Amino acid sequence: MDRRIFIRVTGAGAIVAASASLTGCGQAMPADAIAAWQGPGAEPDVRRWILGYAILAPHSHNLQSWRVNLDAQDEIVLHCDLSRLLPETDPFSRQIMMSHGTFLELLDIAARERGLRAEITLFPDGAFGPKTLDERPVARIRLTPDPTVAKDPLFAQILARRTNRSLYNVARPVPAAAWTAMADAARPSPLRTTSLQANALRFGYANASVGDLLSRHRAIAAEAWRIELTTPRTVMESYRVLRVGADEISQHRDGLSILDPMVMMLNRVGLFDRSKAPAPDYYASTSQIEDFDKKLASTPAFLWLVTEGNDRATQVEAGRAYARVQLAATAHGVAMQPLQQALQEYPEQTRPYADIRQLLGAPQPTSTVQMWARVGFAPPVGPAPRRGVAAQLARA
Ligand SMILES: Cc1cc2nc3c(=O)[nH]c(=O)nc-3n(C[C@H](O)[C@H](O)[C@H](O)COP(=O)(O)O)c2cc1C
Image 1 (tube, rainbow, N blue to C red):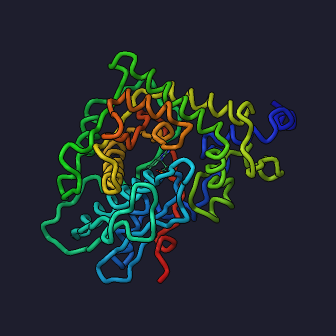
Image 2 (image 1 turned 120 degrees about the vertical axis):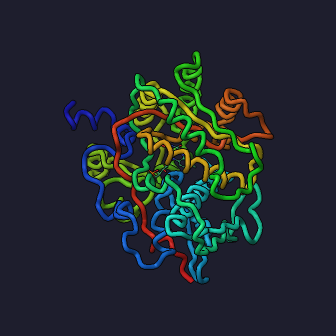
Image 3 (image 1 turned 90 degrees about the horizontal axis):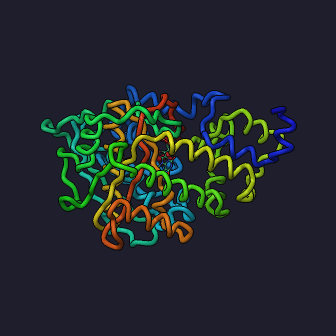
């Protein structure tokens, strides 16, 4: 379609439609935004070297809310940057805590690589309550040299791990060996102690061999996505962390990157108004919903992590497990994208929230579905931006 007609017909709505791919194929990702994916190289300070891997952890909306203090020798203190929360879609910061778990898991794996035991004390000054976070530390990590510490083979996957939001190959099943590796990875690492009770975290998956289960997964995910895209305040929360084009991506090195040429062009000419959510029946919303339906239809399998209980330590442990599961999948070339919408605790999601719990046999209030993800094979995607270790260090 002629570009002018396209703009006239769809207006600013087209922008978000194109953004569905998040990192489109137009402009290249700026090198400075992804420099962290080279790894810490010959970094002489071992704590910064370890952090060079930890900051590559997955984080909801790529917010990188890790604030790190290195004041005490041989210690790393992790706080949450309270300016990097998602109050609309993650009202109790459950996903933020999971995203601290992913960071701690990669930190632990990287420490082992250097022959260091990372003694991780969660919430040393007391755990946050169920609703809000505060300035108290999430974890204090003491690093001690220990010749008996075992290296973790998942270390080799840290630089290769990606969240992959592409179409998957529905005809290519995830092999049994990959499922076994992911299930094993979901168990707390045998290399460390855990604050979780045995069997407090359950890994499960559904693939084409299980009747019409996949269509039920797809239907719940589609409905939850529709709700998120048509609820103005949740759309706005994503808009606030959209980074459109190389300049914005370089400037922030966080959030959701858009490099689609059409979106960038409309943004340049002032037609992408990020100050208000598009109407639900606009092309911006409807095309994204259609696009996501296609992605769900292309998905050959789903996985989940369910915990008994949902206190802060359990959320962190669920994040640690998710990081390990994704690294194990990466080793088998298996792609993954979390689907948190139906798991989110805001009122509009009440129905999908109940549906997914019922489907996964996770009744309230005893269990919580911490992670639900689409799984399959897809063409590789590039890495997401990172702010770099220096930006994560807390100023004294
Ligand atoms: C707790 C948690 C929830 C997430 N939820 C979603 C989600 O619902 N949809 C999605 O596409 N990605 C989701 N992600 C993936 C992040 O967006 C991703 O980690 C981030 O953009 C950085 O990209 P990377 O994983 O490729 O490094 C989630 C990640 C975590 C840790």
